[in-house]
Length: 242
Image 1 (tube, rainbow, N blue to C red):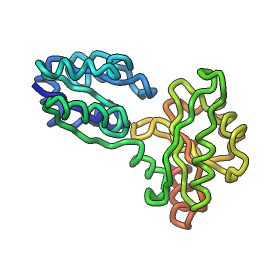
Image 2: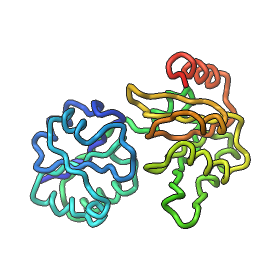
Image 3: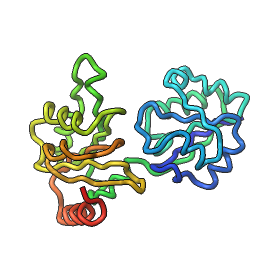
């Protein structure tokens, strides 16, 4: 019996042929979607994979229920992007090893690599951070602002992963309230890695007024070299007009 940890990539059709074969042999296929706004529905993914999929609740994953099932069954856990991007999934693998439950990992594209489609060079990114939805908190967490400042100190770009349900206007307001030293223009990347991908490169105030569909991430660029500047301008104008 085996636990399969499977990265879905960025689109509903990004899963590999080898992984599809495994899914069709599994007793249960779970999908973790409580931490991200997927650019497709569970039903669309079921149609693409031709398997029945159950949405996994946070408490089910944290209680390690999935490991108990994997002791006697073939279980797959589908993860948006890459299978090991989240610390939770690394912890799951550690527990599987302790309990001597066989597991297999299937990697895929993630937002950490797809951001290169903006023209920014991956090696120039610093620490990745996340922006919570302040409407879900009694206080206003601003740790993302500290990461931006740290990255700016070494001329590194900052990738900000926005919380599920956080709309662009609220995200920009939170950014402006928390961070004083922003560049003139920042980037919003919507529906990354899908046919609906759009790159927006503009002032924060202008981005607030644009129709930027979820899911999206924000990128705070540091100084752009001439190649990054040229590619970003070209992609924005010709391929992903805002």
